[in-house]
Length: 99
Image 1 (cartoon, rainbow, N blue to C red):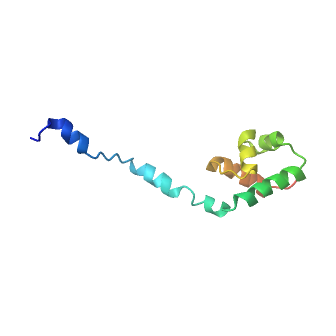
Image 2 (image 1 turned 60 degrees about the vertical axis):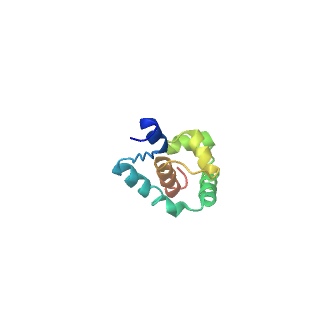
Image 3 (image 1 turned 90 degrees about the vertical axis):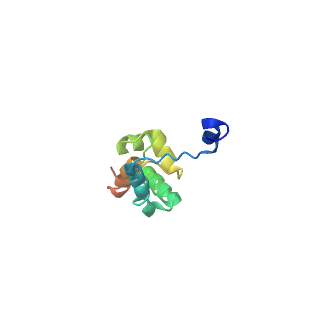
């Protein structure tokens, strides 16, 4: 046994904690679909143009889309959002102009 007992061994040990395989798969898939939205500034501009064209406030546009106004505002300012929010925004952008 080493001098210092288990404590000495503990202090120089490396502990590796690995997440389950499903976590690796989730993270590997993040961004694959979103890569088509590389230009967040262009996406944000398209949101704003459609909103203004339809004469909507940020709150009203968010209600129409089904997202919180804060998330809509972040998107219109070029921030990246969770996939579920982006899906709703993309669907709204590709929908009819006057909705």
